[in-house]
Amino acid sequence: NLKRIVLELGGKDPMIVFADADLDKAANEAVLFSLSNAGQVCCAVERIYVEESVKPQFEQKVVEIAKSWKIGNPNDEGVNMGPM
Image 1 (cartoon, one colour):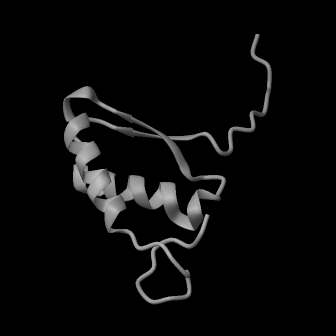
Image 2 (cartoon, rainbow, N blue to C red):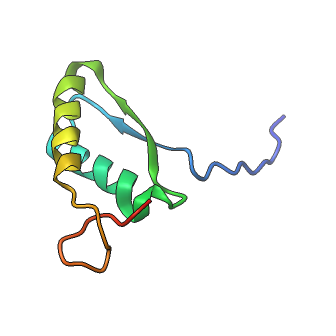
Image 3 (tube, rainbow, N blue to C red):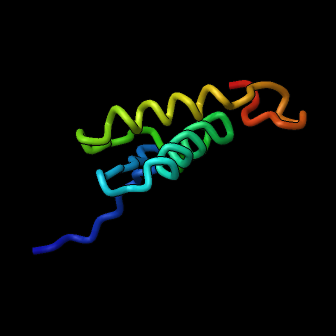
């Protein structure tokens, strides 16, 4: 028998990166969707599962992108993220 249920899963949004993924795009979106609005949105990426064979390259790209983000007053030109 199947029972009808509703599961509230907001806030536990995983991202999965396979070996054949566009790693530049995946890394950019991992940073964007993890840090946008200081990560305070219900659909923010909280966990990232990366296929072992591309993990080092993906991690390096994510670190480079995250380091390039400017933190400050969100009303200032060029600021990517406001205070947490």
